[in-house]
View 1 (tube, rainbow over the protein chains, first blue to last red):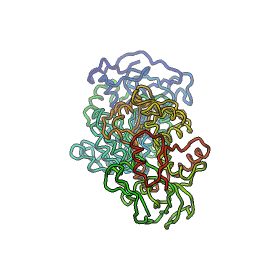
View 2 (view 1 turned 90 degrees about the vertical axis):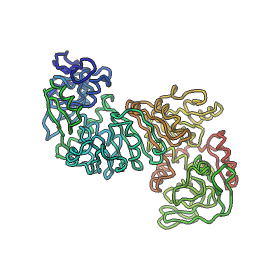
View 3 (view 1 turned 180 degrees about the vertical axis):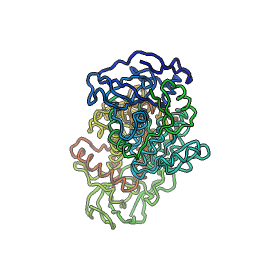
View 4 (view 1 turned 30 degrees about the horizontal axis):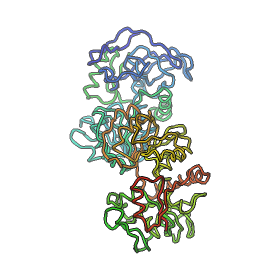
Length: 318
Length: 318
């Protein structure tokens, strides 16, 4: 089969669409003939050599896909050859075929195309697990989501609104603010011209920046607030004011999705199918797609994500 | 009535047992004729001028007591004059009488004396709320508790063991280690001679040190671990390694009990009555009392706590 291979750490130019060996199925795996995949920031870190795949996982990038099951290994539960599905992957989505544990496979949600569905697993699983399993966001609470125009950001805005939260989103461009409001954001803060910590009081913060925002995020938390850090675009180490944390009875959570065992991912996928897919079917939560490119043009897709001009997901189609 | 008055911030000598006005009952308050109170580290901070009582609360020290209800204000639910009780206070326990919201009043647990019961509310509410509401400690997990010989430490060891956890406790004295093992600690680490972060892998850490231990606490956390900081004896600000937090999918929680509204304290007290009091009645969790002193000798009790030679609670008896 063909896949996008990373020819040594580097820029987008190291990505090459070429012939590679077929995936091998482990017990519990299904083989998916890929219809589409999508670009995540983690793919760019992996391309640059900063984020190796977990041991034993595919070396090719791609953390999600849609497609059709063409083979099932032993110990697979509830899935059959011919099922049209989407899946959360630990890697290997930029390929013609990918093997994935059955727990990470989900039915296509109603009301979206098979191509659009390729961009839902990562954002739906990331947002749902962090807002509802980790931060326990409740109706009437305020969510602050950084990077509101990202794939995760656009899903977080919609999903939090659908659950009755008030949503404040940050973005670096006034041009994007209107689109974030259309998606449901009650307030949009331009981080280039305003200090969010002066403007926002939040019960939950979903953060992709890390160190650079740590003290301001804690300042912006209300009593009982939960800060969930899922990215470190602004560095990894920063001073933490524990007195503020105690006074506010607040918490700081770090999470990643990719390194979790298949059973934990499975619990998240079941939650997404039960809670998020009906909202997608009802039109309350929509895939936000910035662009669709042929998979062989993954390098161009990476440049597009790097530029930061996108809103929502960039899809890679076979 | 008489109470311990803090005559200006300072050492134990500023504590004076003298005549003061009677407490006034707010709606929802009961008046307790105090049998005994107990010393907490927060009382020492308050005496030194570092920890003022929340607005509107008694200026006298004392965060817990036992005694008998002698008056009930309007809007009190489920309590009557003559009830023998213990209570979680926002202050004012070092006194002949104290007013307290009804939500913070608990029945005496079976199997302990009324004097012993005076030392249970703070430790039971602190440990129960932090281990089970905040950190969600589960059967089979490992708890690391710093300051194992403190009132909170001795309760945490017993309560975590009673819930099927493995318990590691730190202490600064080999002489105390045996007593902590008797209380149920599976392992005791002398922090003066050993680095706990080299020896322990914990799912939950209950910490009273703060800044000085932050990086080592995070190092000692297992994947999915929860660090709960309830004291800052080792400082308030320290560098946080967010990458370690993400990689471990771990969390840092800060909490305090005293500043919570009465309704939240009430939820905790109901949990303690339901979950901890039966364990006390069954003998699985015992009050650990280091000394009982007359309330007028509060200064001596503070010196005793300051010396750090105690194991468990120091009680003040009328």
